[in-house]
Image (cartoon, rainbow, N blue to C red; front, side, top):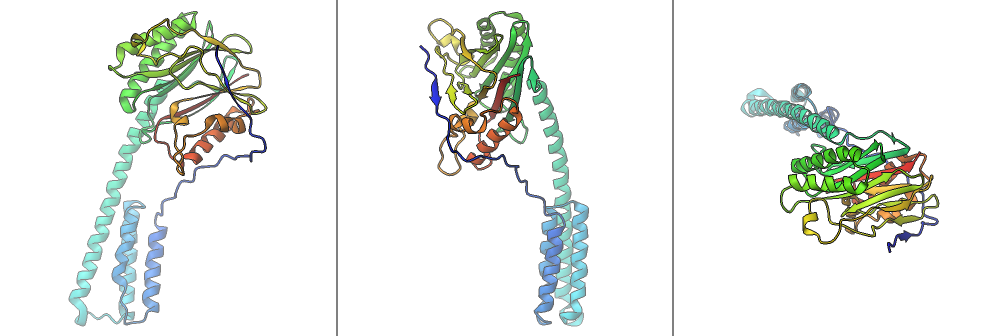
Amino acid sequence: MRSSRRVPPHSGAPALRSFDAVVPVGSGILLPLVLIVGISLTDWLSGPQTYLAPLMIMAPALAGVSTTWRRTLGIGVAGLVAQLALLPYDEVRLPDSGTLLWSQLIAYAVGSLFAAYMAWHYEQSRRVFAAVHSVAEAAQRALLLPPGPEVGDLRLAVRYVSAADTAKIGGDLYTVVETPHGVRALIGDVRGKGLDAVQTASVTLGSFREAAYDEEALTRVAQRVDASVARHMAPGEFTTALFLQFNDPGQVGLLHYGHVPPLRVATDGTVTSLDPPDPWVPLGLSQFATGAPPRPWQETLGADDVLVLCTDGVIEARSAVDGSFYPLAERAGVLAAASADNLEAAVERLYADLLRHTGGSLSDDALLMLVARS
């Protein structure tokens, strides 16, 4: 007999709001200009016996890492003008301090030119990175073929974040397709990260999309995907997966291959973990398992219920404070209850809460998908 773990709803829990990630704005030319003005005023207020102009070199150095190379040159010129303007006030005379003064001005000019060169080099690097990022994101979109907000009689909302955040690609996978046998879905997690994981995800998704249309039984769909993954994966690698089928009103069929059990969130906030009665090994490892392959099992999914699917990057995300795992089963009742009509807001709340738990960053690929009946 299967036992579904029920998590009581949180009564009296404070309402949680989603938050917008605050991205630090580049200092640009503002801070270098403030620095020039500050040094000039400090020099002037300190009296003619204090000569602080050499500190101006900090302005182009700061501009070199915060703005374009042209603006960096402009900051360098502004700093040079400020230094020359301070010479009469600071009683710096060429006959007395000519060698030292010229040495200081030449060093300032060389430093400004070097800062401009570094700014130019950084601009070129950003252009290359932007091109690579664009190609990688396009490849990820082509691979996943993200479904729309509605597929058949289902509504969807997804948040996917790759640990390889510089390329936005990873090994988590999902798809939802409408077939002659009903709406079918797959969510999975490839062991590993990077391009190897993407290749395995491509094989998994491609074989599922083909089999989902061809095979009437969900068991046969999973077996074909399992065989394809086993042929293409390196020894010892695997992919956890959960197959779903929505063809009966108020019901959902599930087939487990080592993946995180889904959660059903009722309108009153009660969360039920839909544990498999017949757990099975991940895709690619069936040849090492004994016994008959797993069979699908049925669960109820009411019109106002929300099905929460995720990968282990969500439930294994650690707190920045005490290192504890993210308690999805506890948080889902607060953040996703009675949200069948607005799944996008619910998944945003869950994702924001996940980031708050981890301190703003994730160390593994993470995928959240919410599903409800139209």
